[in-house]
Length: 102
Image (cartoon, rainbow, N blue to C red; front, side, top):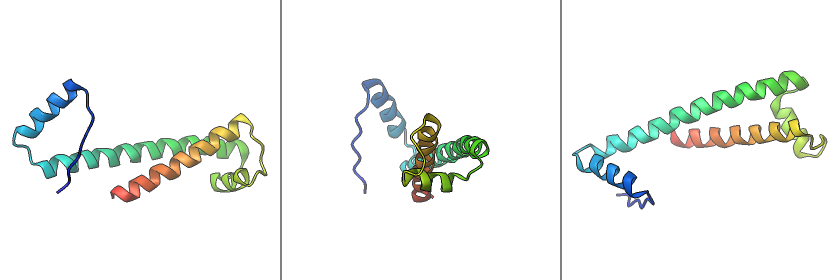
């Protein structure tokens, strides 16, 4: 059994208690939260890939090659490169979270 402690606003806490006290299947409730998070991560990953595609077209380079060169200091710290590297890192983080949840 998992003992979860959440810090919630009083209104949110009251509403959540109503849901949990209504006889809802706690397993199903938790699984629905996980499923929702999976869908949000999938949607976010798709949007990140679309953003990365724009940089790849603009600079004629894959994000993997870009990130490797950027991380090694081969590329400078211009604004586009800073944004691009942040998108790559966010994509990797989201993909890692998605794998853990699936």
